[in-house]
Image (cartoon, rainbow, N blue to C red; front, top):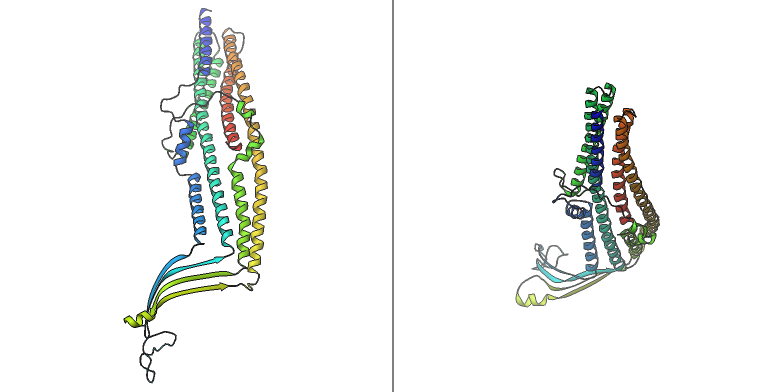
Length: 434
């Protein structure tokens, strides 16, 4: 009986210590990478965000080219042509090919050339709108990458927390098995109790193995975002504090701050300017040039000076009939503008739905965290009482093993609820344009 009381006291002390260990936050490693540092590292690694930056830079070049189209281009040209003399009875110094100006012809021009049409202004406005859309798209990609990093970061953190909880559950199961073995050797409990205690330990050991596997995979996933998949960094533990004060203050109007709206508006403007560009194909186009140079058959001074001068040309191209090609382009541009406007309406509804969903998921996850904390406290108390009752011979071993299993499950559920809260909160911040 004295041995039974000592073993019971030992189990109660271990259970109490386990509760204290569960309530104490894990120490943060001195070199642990924070979420903000991980996000900054992800921005520097190869990602769709960098691709979006390249697309934005390309759109800026399109706008620069559209503006440059208004200005004449400086050009220079030189040419030499030889035309064999005509055969007699042609006069001397007559070229054989009448299309040429002389037997030898030297030409050099320096000047300006350009073109103008009614669609150039619309093309410039379209390029500007597409640049604004690309800029907004870069911000969308940046936020999406930040969300992905946060999910991977918290995923690695919760995997570590679950592994730690599984290790604590295994330690408790091993201690329970040790005490049960001592009781069996003392003849106080049957062998079946020892077998059930070993089965409990085996289950907890399997849980730990799976938790370790999940932790390794989650760390590698985070490392992939950071460009160091083979050497994932140490990170801070999963936050154990839940605060919904800022969540409750958010309203659906905050969705309008999202860069997707700016991107959609810019795309609609670009599509509407496409209509003006298409209409310009039915209007006159002007090509002009202004050059100075020479076109001479000889470099003899007097003859050369006669062939030096200015050359100005203006060409007007007036479309008359193109078998309906221009009209088809206009209809096509109108359809694209209509599609862009429709896409804006659809996306607006989707973004508002994302906000409402993320807000409710965050509030629900916060409630689950509170519920899991209370359930874990009850599970800890249940373990203490059940093991004490078993040691006193008042309850079967199944009650103790069920209590240990329940506590292990509640530990995991608490960490999962904390993870779900952090992920939902990250989605809500993105949905609200933060």
